[in-house]
Image (tube, rainbow over all chains, first blue to last red; front, side):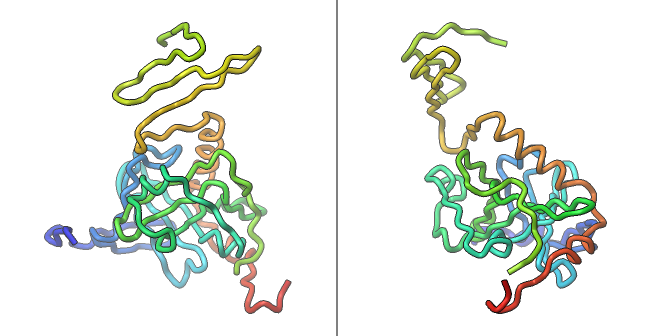
Length: 149
Length: 81
């Protein structure tokens, strides 16, 4: 661990889902931002009982960006998205099993959609993440979420 | 915009270490090979745009968590279908 805890006074993060306090070690670097939010380079993944089974991926830098996310395997239990060597390199290597997966959820007036094609992947050991953009994914960009596993 | 004429097997170099090479030319398509460092994202534009649009839609300020929660049914055990 090379983190200095000197600046780790909890940062207050206000979201549509409530106020959270996050420490410096909770911040996940997104070196290339996310499509449409390229200026957002630091995010936190927020969990609470009220949010479950969802979580909130919230930017703490750049324009406010707040996404409701869910583990894609809770939308489709047999979900399997393979990483390329480039993906692994961007995530800093390590075991695939240790990665966190978060699919972005879009809540519309009449349905809830999950982006299974371009999931966010986070390496919790290095606190680095990015949104996969596979060009040949079999999974839909807009999967209607009706049940959670 | 910089405009180049390239023949098959010719390339252009962008910044340090990014090479874009013309591999094949047919009537209305060009096959390109991109060599770039692993930390340089390279995507087909339309795929990037689709994901960007979906992200922007998802990031709308939502107070509708309860809608999302009320719509999903949590499957318990394996008995349900």
